[in-house]
Amino acid sequence: MPAPDLETIVSLAKRRGFVFPSAEIYGGFANTYDYGPLGVELKRNIREAWWKSMVRDRDDVVGIDAALITNPNVWVASGHVANFTDPLVDCRKCQMRFRLDHLEEGAYGEVRRNAAGQVVCPNDGGELTEPRMFNMMFKTQVGPVADETAVAYLPPETAQGMFVNFENVVTSMRRKLPFGIAQARTSFRNEITPGKFIFRTLEFEQMEMEFFCKPGTDLEWYRYWVDERLRWYTEVVGIDPSRLRLREHAKEELSHYSAGTTDIEYLFPWGWGELEGVADRTDYDLKAHSAQSGHPISYFDEESGEHLVPYVVEPAAGLSRTLAVVLLDVYTEEPDEKGDSRVVLKFRPNIAPIKVAVLPLSKNEKLRPLARRVYDLVRPKWMTQYDETQSIGRRYRRQDEIGTPFCVTVDFDSLEDDAVTIRERDSQEQLRVPIGGLVAALNERLDC
Ligand code: GAP
Image: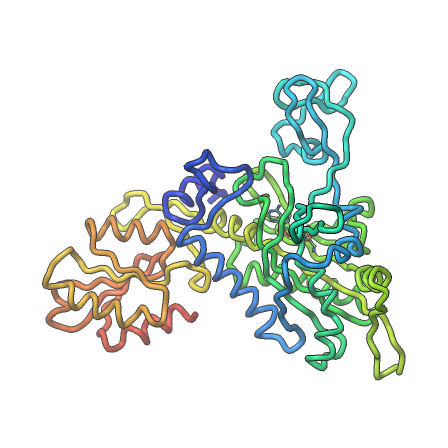
């Protein structure tokens, strides 16, 4: 089945409590969204899956949680103060403002050109001003006086927290190369291009890992992490491999710090777009922080008996963007048990926001006590919903539409045989199990 269009997902996300436009009662706010009760669970599950694969299941990566607002010299050293800029142009007719690079990529719709071949305003064909460079970091002020010495920045990436803590981690955790430091946290960018739902937002969560290795081994690790991260999307998150591809950056496209970058791209409804970048950042960042801070950062290599500056390979993923991809990827329309159409979000169980729904066959005083007992049995182990409103068929549809892998139905026979029916979301198969064996039966099937 082809991927759904974006409007279908935006509408389902709002209707079912995944993602809401932010401050909607005030008319919203550009490129800003709020996560609803199911969205926050989904986001947690993706973050947990990443943390498990990148930190808990490995011996060579540790996690940190660095401050958001920190010494502004960090952003001078990283190059963001000088280089994190994009070209902005204004339409001389309608005064609308655009990012020239996004305009040229078609982010505002069809690219329009004048007779001389120059890009013009996508709205009214108006001539554009010369590009002006615009820094995408949000500035804030620390303390009561708003002068230049009080300037601080909201972080545009999580990576720098790992570089400035490199020595702390080596010393406190007795780490030897190669090893990584991981962090999943909010980043901020002053994006002016319309963001296509949560694909591009002002604030978003990133899941980044800096893998420190000996110079000369970086290329090998770079290839390893490209493969490993692609495997994570397909095997752990369950993304359709035919909608993923790798794209290596051309030399002129590389960021100021990168000796090589490969994007993991997803086939969005508007075409291929970046989901994660894996970059060989060389020793750029550690050297830059050494120079800016006056505190030389190095690593003592016991094997050679020499101090060296490690190279770094960075897999940098967007959590919010992965959430958008998951919603697009799992959306399915197909016939239900009765041959009517149903919408199903086919999440892998580890990612699904709600794992089990307990549904008494009908809203009935006789069924309720047993149904509540079943609910109390299941909910300590998995995120579970209890629902007794409307017909059972409608409740199955509702659970399908939010991607709940299993429904447990309590019917009038349950009062006699102390058994319930498990209905599996994708096959719609039903299985009768004794209540005493319910948790074990779900455990076997959910495996999370
Ligand atoms: N430390 C390297 C770095 O930040 P990046 O390619 O700029 O690299 C990494 O960002 C990932 O963060 C992207 O692949 C994307 O998934 C996500 N991302 C970047 N800007 C974003 C935005 N404005 N909204 C949502 N996600 C974003």
